[in-house]
Length: 393
Image: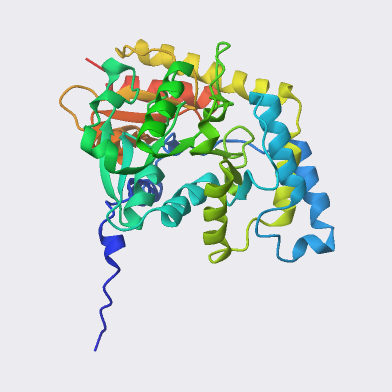
């Protein structure tokens, strides 16, 4: 006799996780002998910088690093975070209360929702958006108001479109510029407007700044914390996954309002023991690398961006070059849904892209392509598209 155990309602409320489904399809394609070119996930190729690897190796030799790390992260790493923020953005942070290391920014974004959202609370989230921005609140039992982003508005949140009664009820607003998946960037004036909006309605702002270091053509993204008064009502998340090719190391951090961070810290002390101290030592080394390393990473992704944009233009797509991130946000051919296009592309060419609806309903009609392969593989992508007749009419 079998037993059936029903998952909690919080799990039943979640839509299917498209990345998990993509993994299943990729496994089947590999079994069929397809040479996959996986441009689906934002998983940087290559190794972390050698000084970072060396720092991790040395830290492994220190016996005390093999015990439980401090709940709030090592003081050394927190001080490195504060120095890095001041160097990059001119923002002053207290390493003791305004910076908290995380097991990757996704973990922190989701746990922040659990720390601050009660069932039924109203949360404002963009659509399309990085899945953790809406899945975290859903797990916490939030009611979501999806702020639909539109290409004709450069994928910027239209604060004036939020109904007054919903703005008054809202507890948290998640947002992300430079944006995953749309690659959109926001001017400083937008950040000033959203701080004023949040102050007027007493809303907690959660900004995801994970792609700020992957900016091109001289563009410098804005940190929310640069805006006067922002720290009173906001936190900002960052990760070492993208810039420093440390996705598998699982290390990021949140900075900003000390009271908000303390709430997240309190929750995390009941859920985890923090990041392995050797990884924190390596992350500290990454943040102290000279700016030339960041410039090299920017050049690498910019060259891939330029190459693939030009190639897709030759196949009929009218693409602008994004100013930041490691992605292209590409319209599906007319008459095809994002899921159909992604599956058709995988089956006909072995190229993996992410359907836009993975990022919310407003992502329908697009796919996200990650710039995570060298130019020879990107050329192979273009060759396969050409041979399979995949183009934008």
